[in-house]
Every structure is written in structure tokens, then in C-alpha cells.
Length: 172
Image: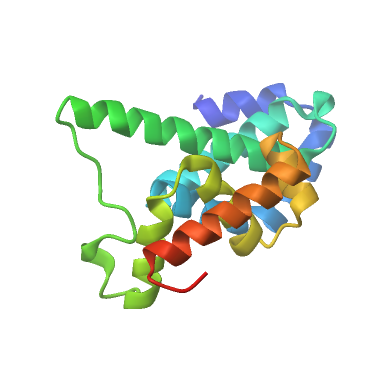
């Protein structure tokens, strides 16, 4: 029996329907968020699937499943990025991110430039921008997802946008 089947077997039958409904509604956006964070769709899909499997397993102890799943996706993306950083130190590579030169043909030059600039921002600033402008979440939801105050979200967004403006050569 594979890992996914074992985890699903442990979850309650009533949680299966609820998790399936949440998956159908939120997985595409979470995969896009993961792709922005890790740079490739296959890894993003794995991250999201793992987050939903864990949600299913822990269903009875989760108060806010959507916030929990978003946080789980972000945490798993951070883990992927840390593992990649360690692998790079030992000379092991991974596929280039979606905004690399190899995929520039498929993505407009402006979008590629923007994604590269965002990728250079500190982790928290990147996450806030992705959640705010890509996932279109309000500040209160971003704060819950990241476990910070609403004021932190606001100030982080402001600093990130200022840094992007400076990087992209725009007037603030």
C-alpha cells in the first residue's frame, strides 16, 4: 500500500468529503502559490498534495482548514528551498525555476523580470506579496496564515513594494 493510501486510511470517513471539497476549491491556487515559491510545477503539486494529506489526517484537530493548508504549503515550500540550498552547497542541482531563461520564451519578459525581482526579496516579503496580490487574500487572512500581526503584514507589504520599485527602476 502506498503512502497516500495509508494516510487516507487513517483519516475519518466524514473528513474525506470535506477535504475533497476543499481540495477542489483551493488546490489550483495553492499550486500556483507553491510554483511561485519553489519555481516548478511538479514540486508545487507534491507540496500541495502533502499538505492536503496532512489536513485529512489531522482533520479533527484543525479549526480553520483553509488557513492551516495555506500555512502548510508555505512551510513545505520553505523546506524544499532549504533542501535545495543544502544540495547546492554539495554541488547537486535541481531544475531551473519557472522564471529562468529556459522558460522565458513562454513567459513575457516583463513578467519574468518581475518574478526574478520578487525572488530576490527576503522570504517573508515574498510570501506576503504572493498571498496579497497573487492569492488575493486580505491582510487579516495573510496575518493568520503567516502567524503574524496585521500591522506586520501591512508594513512588510509596503517594504516589499518599495524594494520592488527600486529594483525595477520605478519611482516610489
